Amino acid sequence: MAEGDVGNDQRQNEEIEAMAAIYGEEWCVIDDSAKIFCIRISDNIDDPKWTVCLQVNLPSEYPSTAPPVYQLNAPWLKGQERADLSNSLEEIYIQNIGESILYLWVEKIRDVLIQKSQTAEPGPDVKKKTEEEDVECEDGLIVEYQPENAVRALDFNISEHVPEIEELPPVDHGVPITDRRSTFQAHVAPVVCPKQVKMVLAKLYENKKIASATHNIYAYRIYCEDKQTFLQDCEDDGETAAGGRLLHLMEILKVKNVMVVVSRWYGGILLGPDRFKHINNCARNILVEKNFTSSPEESSKSLGKKKVKKDKKRSEH
Image (cartoon, rainbow, N blue to C red):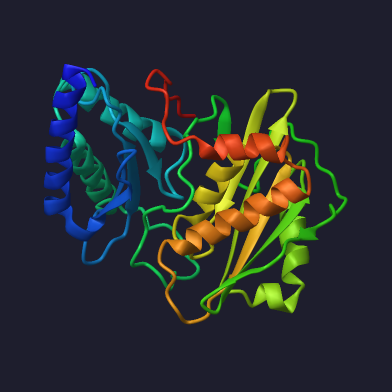
C-alpha cells in the first residue's frame, strides 16, 4: 500500500468513527471492507417530512486526491432538484479538496431538506407506512452505481413520442420466497409505453391475493429508439426506498422494455435489511428466468462489482 493510501486509510477510519459518534443510528455500515456506508438524513429527526438516504463509497485516494463516490436515494428526488443537490455536494468537494467532507455533505443535505420543509410544498405522498422503518440502509446486493446518461423519470400523463399500445402484455409470476412468515413474489411483463404499465398494474390488482399484499413495489424501464433515452420510474408503495433499489437493480442488469412488480405479504416479524435482499433477489430471478437479461453469467458479473471507477463522471438528468 502506498504511503498516501496509508494516510488516507487512517483519516478515513477517524472520519468514520466521528460520523458514527455524531449521527448514531442514522449512520449505517453496508460493507466495512469496501468502505461503503449509508446515512439517513431528515429535515426533522422527531417528525420527518423529507428524507434522503446518502450512500457513500470511500475510494483509497480519498480524501487526499479523490472524492467519495455517492448515491442519493429518495423517491421524490428527481430532475432539476436532484441535479441541484448533486452540484452542491460537488462544489463542497471542490472547495475542500484534500479534506474530509462527509459531515459537510450531510449537513448541506439537511439544510436543503429543512428549507424544503419550510415551504408550502406538502410532503411526499406515501400511501402506506412501512412496518420496518427501523432500517433504511441497503444490505444484500452492493452494486456498481452507473447513472444513465439519458434517463428521465416519467409521470403517467407524459408520453413524449412513445407509441401508445392498447394490448395488455403477458404477465409472468415468479417463485415466492418466504422468510419468517413474510412472503415475496415477483411479477414481470414486457412494456413499451406507460399506458401498458398502468394496464399491467390494473391486471395484477384484479387478483385478490396480490391486491391484498402489504406492498406492491414496482419499477419499469422503457427505451425510446428515436431519442435513444430511457423512460423509467418506480414506486415504493409504502416500503420506503424499495422502488429505487429495484430500479437500480434493473439499471445494473441493463434490462429494457420491462416492468417488475414485487408483492410482499408482511408476516408480523421484522426482517430488517433482509427484506431488500429478498425483493431484489425475487426480481433478479424472474428477469433472468424470462430472458430479459443478456445472460445469467453477465448478470452475475454486473452484480458482483462493488467499487465504482473514480473517474466515472456523474451526470444527472
